[in-house]
Structures are given as C-alpha cells and as structure tokens.
Length: 152
Image (cartoon, rainbow, N blue to C red):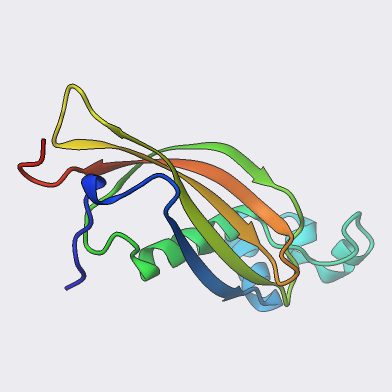
C-alpha cells in the first residue's frame, strides 16, 4: 500500500510532475460526444472550417485527464483528499490530436485549520503544458488534507 503523506509532511514550493498524456483524435471525439458535443470537438469537417482549423479537445476533457493522472500517480500516497475548490481555471491554448500533455503541480500554500486541527487546506497550482512547453491549461486547486495524527 502506498505511503501516507500528511499536511505536516509538505512544504510550499514542493512540486510533482505528471504525464505524459497523449491526446488522440479518437479520445477527443469520444469524450466530447458524450460530454461536450460542440462541432469543434466532434465534427472534423465543421472543425476544419471553424476558427481553430481542426478538431480540438474540450477543456473539460483536458481537466478530466489531468485529474486521472493525479489519481494514478498518487503523489500523496493513500492519504484521503477532498477537493474543495478550483480557482482561476484557464484554458490558454487549444489542445489538438497528437498533443502530449505534461503537468506540474506545485504547493503554493498550506494552512492548518484552527477549528479542526486534525486537518488543513493545501493550495496547489496546476500547470499543463504541451510538447512545445506551451501552457494549455492552468488552475489553482484547494484540497482538504488530514494532518499527521497527534501532531501539534
């Protein structure tokens, strides 16, 4: 079983990396067909004549694969986390079939709860880049995380 990591084990500035995630046209169309069926995501002919000049991934698809990568890489081991909030979600650049995504997760703040000292809030900045190191998506994520048992 993976090692548990607690709020007390972390420091502002710590980073983890995720990916690579290959974005295929079939996956982009499949996801969008179910969750975001706009022509730029599902119809090659319509997308080709649109402002992006071809199929692009739904931003929600990009967010979903980033979440899956977080779960699969388990940077905090088996520690249970609870997502509280997403701030400043930005889709900066279209993600296209053939793009390879990489994720940098950086702790930007750690705050222990005053009213519930057995937990706290971890703030992380997620930055997603493509194979050219261009930022395609970024957001700040607030997560509730347990403190180490019996830690002051």
